Amino acid sequence: MTSNEPGWTGLDEADVDVEVDFDEGEFDESDFEEAEAAEGDIEDVDEGPVPVVAVVGRPNVGKSTLVNRIIGRRQAVVEDVPGVTRDRVAYDALWSGRRFTIVDTGGWEPDARDRAKAIAAQAEAAVQTSDVVLFVVDATVGPTDDDEAAVRMLRRGGKPVVLVANKVDNARLEAEATLLWSLGLGEPHPVSALHGRGSGDLLDAVLDAIPEHPTGMVRPRGPRRVALVGRPNVGKSSLLNRLAREERAVVDSVAGTTVDPVDSLVSIGGEIWNLVDTAGLRKRVGFASGTEYYASLRTSAAIEAAEVAVVLLDAHEPISEQDQRIITMVAEAGRALIIAFNKWDLVDEDRRYQLGREVERELRRVPWALRLNISAKTGRAVDKLAPALRTALDNWSRRISTGRLNQFLTALVQATPHPVRGGKSPRILFATQAGTSPPRFVLFTTGALDPGYVRFVERRLREEFDFAGTPIHVSVRPRKKQNHGRGRG
Image 1 (cartoon, rainbow, N blue to C red):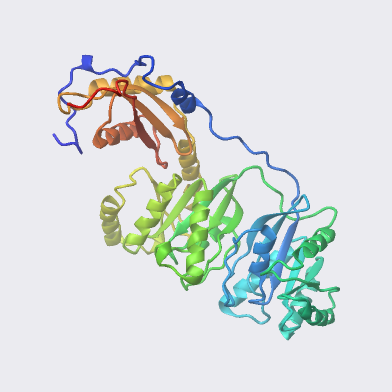
Image 2: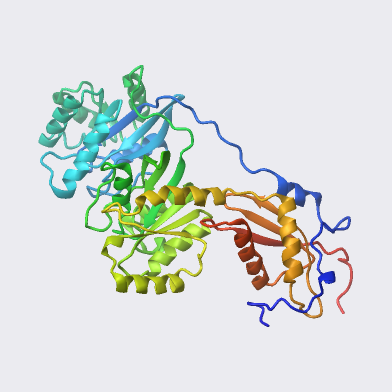
């Protein structure tokens, strides 16, 4: 009999007690009040149309820096090279008590090809779905042929346009901004997105340009947040586009196309979900640099903000150490978990056998995760994602009544009591569920329990109450010792 896999022998049933059995002073009353308290308040969400402001312009004119300035935090990925932003990325913003959505876009270029063409198409789509457009121009360069081509594209869109003369870091450069009158979009608003100069006046102009009846996106009432995570080039953006039935995210065979987390409201299985396409994680955050470092931080934050994560693995490649690291990141964040083996259309019989062995060996730490075999390219089994999401989230928020939980534990411990250690055996006095999302259980005991026995209790909790798709936490709280003054012999 080992401590890791105890044989659970050596105690009579009379020695086991899981009834509510505590004397005065053994536990603080606050222990039970805390365990029984409901956690979290449901925040009211405003309904109705929310104005949408699209930020467009040539590459590297400071669009993402301006977005960060407007939302008041470093959310959009910024680096001093063109082409860092590639998708439409929406953020909530607030100015003078007015809420609106700001949409960052990739650099727009005329006659773009390949991936640049897809990025430009995303920018044009942002213009079409917006209420106001912020057209950003580098005032230190002045109007260019590409800027004039962008103006023609904006005029076709028919949306109000606010002209932003960016990189005006001092009063001397304001004279340079006057050259932008030649674009025919009215008064240029000189700002420094980096330093914040002129940003307040710009936001006042944005609010003035918003139509009385905005036609932008409608703020939903609490769609469940789903993070799509995985290594680069496993098909996260392809899956998002398949589910959305349109090109929401730029897809390219080159790994690392997605940099910012891309939020999209998508209808799956008759329900609206908020899917977040994230940057591929190729290494630990501490070993990443530049754009990859900040993208890794955004992905980690997206996991924390999500309720459930869909970790995509490339089914026709071996499960890698990085795959396991990402899965562990999700589990440690306490999020519901679905593992989707993508590119199943490329898997032959030999690979299926090898994959089965890999799952048993490499994923044994998360046997509770739901697993799907899908193909984002062909659409195979993607319709099974919605039921899996609902199952994982239902279990993630499941609460077991205290009475039912203690009845279960009474039968469990009577059948398989804790082993004797040094002539003694700790008793479980009481148990309660301290919280949900994920489920957390507290065992009040007379002493510390073997880690193996705690794992045994967790495994049986899963079998009894079906917690597939969600991590659960079981903690032990030994009662306080009363005779603190007794000397040690």
